[in-house]
Image (tube, rainbow, N blue to C red; front, side, top):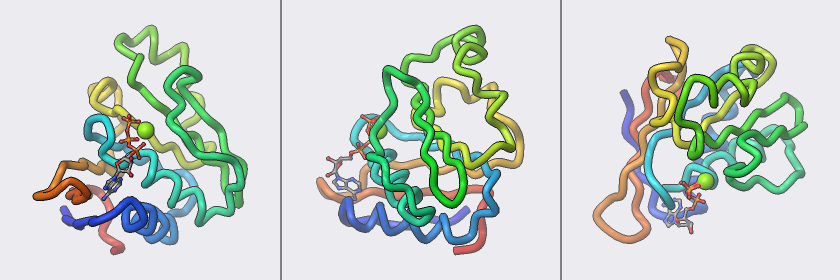
Length: 141
Ligand SMILES: Nc1ncnc2c1ncn2[C@@H]1O[C@H](COP(=O)(O)OP(=O)(O)OP(=O)(O)O)[C@@H](O)[C@H]1O
Ligand SMILES: [Mg+2]
């Protein structure tokens, strides 16, 4: 596990970009951490690396946003997903291996997550703008 401290939204976006540089294009990245922890900011940075021009925002109501860049990116928000039925109807399992999957509110589908994925837990640090990123399943940075 690796721990990285971010001191601003910009630093969190940069972290997303840095991790993106090492991805092959079919990874699953599960983000954990409550509201306002920077999951979307991280995803924005990651998408930027792949040349995504679309706006990156939490897909709370649509559940999944698809971004077309150098690789396909499927951005899920599981905030409203509570049951296996809910999860199946998002089409989640059909997206696996079709591109990079990045998931907000992974807490809600923890039991359904495949093995050997990248898990990132974000916690608040010692001040308002500090976030601690605990990264598992990824050793390239
Ligand atoms: N170090 C930091 N990294 C990321 N965001 C930060 C940081 N410090 C402060 N912020 C602020 O926290 C908020 C993070 O918002 P963001 O939408 O990325 O969170 P989120 O985890 O996706 O929340 P939600 O679960 O509601 O979708 C922004 O308002 C941002 O300015
Ligand atoms: Mg979000």
